[in-house]
Length: 92
Image (cartoon, rainbow, N blue to C red; front, side):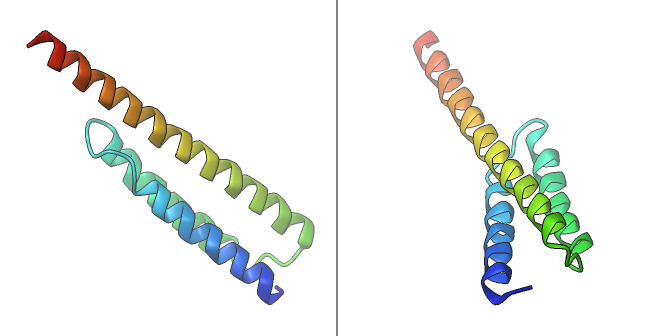
């Protein structure tokens, strides 16, 4: 793997780990956070020996999609928490 490709993969890996840790730690999320974190780590370990450029590109595309999904979920949960908090404040 070329140095720039390796740097891109490592950067994506770090970002996925960082984003997967942002799930709020309430209800199911703490379990989901742990699973997401472990899933990211395991997926990258499992595929670290892949050398076929087409397969690498497909894996990177899936990782980018996963990152976008995690980021959206974190945002949605933050919005839900803030709206619930706002509703509770109005009721008191």
